[in-house]
Structures are given as structure tokens and as C-alpha cells.
Image 1: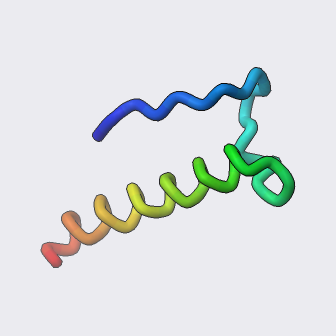
Image 2 (image 1 turned 120 degrees about the horizontal axis):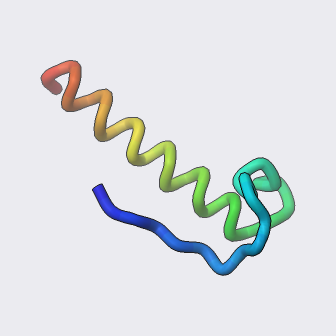
Image 3 (image 1 turned 180 degrees about the vertical axis):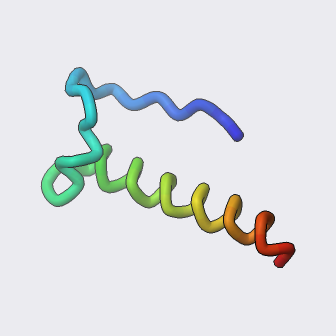
Amino acid sequence: MRLESYPVAARSFQLYWSFLPEAADAMMRIGDFVRVVTARADGS
């Protein structure tokens, strides 16, 4: 696990993924993290 920092002043900026490139990147990284954690939990 690691801390990701983005140069955005808005709270919950991930909600603006459709038009804010940093938010889209953050959502992709969140998805990657969830896939890794759930795969470990499933024993895959």
C-alpha cells in the first residue's frame, strides 16, 4: 500500500473523473488497488 498525492485542491475530486485527468488517473489506481486486495482475499 502507498500514499498517492494529486495536485488538486478539491475534496473528493475523484467524482470529476469524466473531465479531470487527475481524477480519472486516481479512479484507475483505486480500481487496481481493489483488484489486488480482493485477489489476495480470494487466495488467487
